[in-house]
Image (cartoon, rainbow, N blue to C red; front, side, top):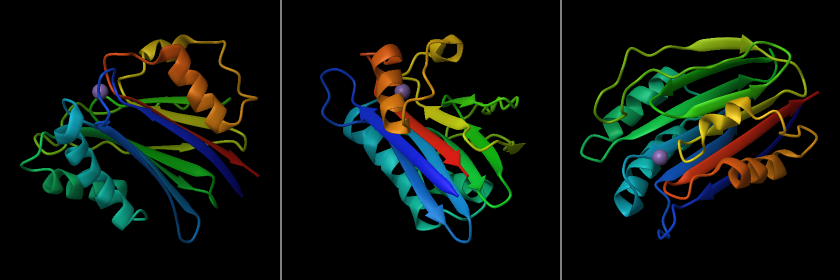
Length: 193
Ligand SMILES: [Mn+2]
């Protein structure tokens, strides 16, 4: 099973530090955890919150996403808080789950109707009742997670070329749909046979 992925993080104009971050981690026996995190506000304090959640995911990427979100919620008490979403792949079963809290976007390019949605809330402040969505996917499908520094017009952009490798795709999405006035992050993942 092949996994190819790419990512871009761009701080908002005038900032050198991004309050967004992401995690892409394989785990045994056939798992892949993909996560985008947006620390609230901007700059160093936002980055501190996002990094704390990223540390939770990196520590045990194979744990259930609900546990990772609950643990992040605890870890982010006393910070500005963050929004985050997790795509958790079982590469053996060709299935993926989505769990998100707050304003992280997911765009899936597939012949199958995979339309993940997040629950409202803020990790560190208000953890909603978590919703786990489970989907089958096809080899060759492309999954994109993005922070709200990317315009949701991405959803209706039919010019996106899926012949691009994921890194180029992520860069293209940022170039086309990135907002100058917020940190912007795109992670693109493609699973092949
Ligand atoms: Mn943001």
